[in-house]
Length: 228
Picture 1 (cartoon, helix red, strand yellow):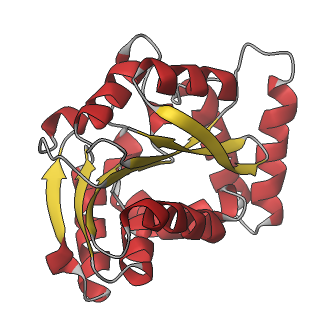
Picture 2 (cartoon, rainbow, N blue to C red):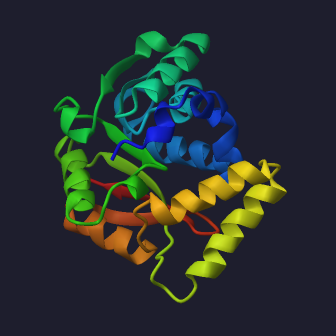
């Protein structure tokens, strides 16, 4: 599931500019995710962050909740290094325990909360998506919140071309370079393992999560808060 471009130094250098251009209301989505976790766990707690490479959500969560600590997991070494540098610059590196690998390589916990933002769409829906969600669930305390944000374009659906075009137009109008947009849109078709929003909700339920609540929607992006 590791993608080669996440080990490319130039891609990693530019990564921080990407999400805001491709994900509607990206910063506000992070704020809402933090707010909904804080609603259940309060001002202190340990949060498992799956797909922590780049460090953008870690930096946001660290600033919004100064007493939280984190376990950051990512399979791309270069992206994990970038995240470590970002957290050092933010003065919060001592609050993160870093793990190079997948959810199966993460500590057992139990954690007070967990997140998977812009990550699950890299995991194939051949049993691995649900297994990944089950492994997250297994590492959470009873009642702990889990925040999932995923790109939900079913390429087999009749409206897939429309959804892909909307994704492209939003990025271009956000100021992303046309070459970067075309490359990224190509990866949606050839690399990502996207499923519909309905399928994500089904997978969450199958993994044992309850109280699945939609908190974010932006074009084809969807975000849920679920409870272990």
